[in-house]
Length: 388
Ligand SMILES: Nc1ncnc2c1ncn2[C@@H]1O[C@H](COP(=O)(O)OP(=O)(O)O)[C@@H](O)[C@H]1O
Ligand SMILES: [Mg+2]
Image (cartoon, rainbow, N blue to C red; front, side, top):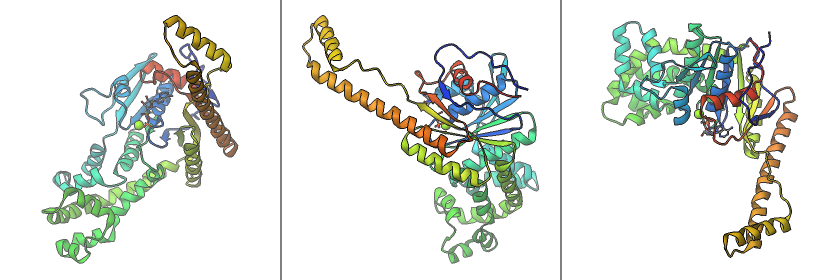
């Protein structure tokens, strides 16, 4: 069934070209892309749109900007990792800010052989350092959080705003990476031989070492031994999950919205990333080119501009170099035009290389979309219809 779209707020539509149309079979939507392109904004907008269309939706955000957090109600005194509800057009959207530590702690608590063993591990400084400093921990927690929400079965759609990884591919590798730490032969050796083994290995294992460096020297050998002992008990669970999490990424009910900007660099990066996503069996639902600059101010001609500037200067009683100012304005307009052309080329190239994937554009909005109404305006243009 196709939903009749609710009327988007009046004003210019922020999107152009192709639109997103999420299949009803999608249960998880991953919003991926480089840092600062608008992932959090697009994820919140998509989730809001789906909620208004009647899907029970939760958005998991990561480090939302202060204004967006205010709009979603996740900046209050509720701790991160708890669901907060925002209401729009009679619909409720569940929002939560990812809390890496809390997500790991939940896995440990749930899968320790005893409550006492669980608490010992939670209090261990090596464990806490691992969660804070280990590469991939945030990404792992993000996917694990989605997995927990999916298992809870309270939502029709889970939208994940992914971490701002420098290289978005790291995100896909996080489950395997954490499993590698847990399964590292050096770690296993150490857990049996303690400090002697550590010296024997020259503190070898790179990934483990990062966590160790973070907490400094001193007592860590004893902590490490205890950590590895305790960790061994929940290790199996982390490993089992790594497989389940990797499976979630490639499940037919999981889709990806790649968000990026339309600069030459971003488009090249997006093309490379799309290829990797497809090769790994992920389903790409849309590419969103955010803050798409396509408006070029009209130029009435040098003479007309100089005349207008001259008239304005006379009116204000100012003496100015009219020709120099007109030249500067023409240069600025040229730069804007080049940028718009390059954005257009980027969109064209993406469409040519991915002809069956919707490549959507979202105009730069002024002010940036931070209120719930503004997010909804963005989303309604991007997703005019949402199938239930
Ligand atoms: N279409 C848009 N027009 C104008 N500003 C935008 C748009 N989309 C996002 N922004 C702004 O850009 C900044 C980065 O967006 P954000 O969603 O936090 O990106 P990311 O999650 O990728 O780091 C924020 O200040 C946001 O309000
Ligand atoms: Mg963000």
